[in-house]
Every structure is written in structure tokens, then in C-alpha cells.
Image 1 (cartoon, rainbow, N blue to C red):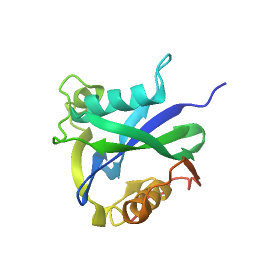
Image 2 (cartoon, one colour):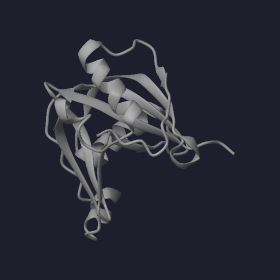
Image 3 (cartoon, helix red, strand yellow):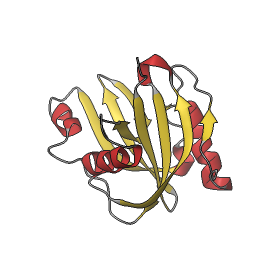
Image 4 (cartoon, rainbow, N blue to C red):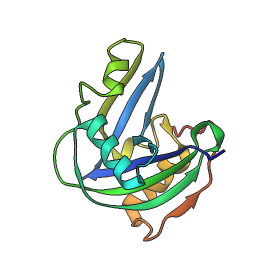
Length: 156
């Protein structure tokens, strides 16, 4: 059986990171925008689709900078650095996330999170949060770097 493959987007606008705030039945946390790669879809196509669905945004050039094997529950996360080309995030009203949010207990809110708050809020996953902050300050790797997954990790 093939492990689930997902994509995540690092989009930086000045001193802010594009993130998804989740309130999952009272459990509030933040994560990068993204989701699963559908059958017959490549990683870049999935990334661009997820960004459109979850934020209504398009991005310029993209390149994979991190890979995190997050175990059987989350699978392999392919994290891409994306060129910000403009706009503000708005959940597409026809997206799965908007339909789930409309029920009122499992909420999705795309937003700009100040980079200096990424390590202060509950962020999934800690290794991705630390790597993206290091990349924002010192430059992102030219080739995808493997990250060590910490189960149930949440940066604070």
C-alpha cells in the first residue's frame, strides 16, 4: 500500500506567512495551506489547486524545499516555497473547507500570520515551523531537505 502524499505551501509576504488557522472542535492550531495529491495529479498541480481552493490565490514559481514523512496518519508532506504574486486569502465558498466550516464546529480560516509568531502559536508541525523560520531568515535549501517528524508536534 502506498503512503498518502500531500503538499504544503510556504508563501511569504514581507514579514507574514500564509497559514490556515484551524479550530477543530475547540482544538485551535495553525498549519500551512495544502492537502492531498489526487490520483493522476502531480505535486505542483495539487499545490496550485489547494492554494486556489483554500485561499483563492495564485502563486508564481514554486520549488520543493522540505519533505517530511509524518507517519501513517499524515503521510509524506512535500513542502514548497511559493512566489507570492499578490492578493489576500479568502476561502473559496465552494471548497470542502468552506462547506465544513459552515457547519460551525470544524473551522478553517486562511490568514496572514506574522512570521515572528509562528513559533509562539500551536503550529503543525514543529519541524516544519522551525525549518520555515530558519529558511525565512537564512535562505531556503536549493534541493528538498528531509525533516525529522515529531509525532503530535506543536510549536509553542
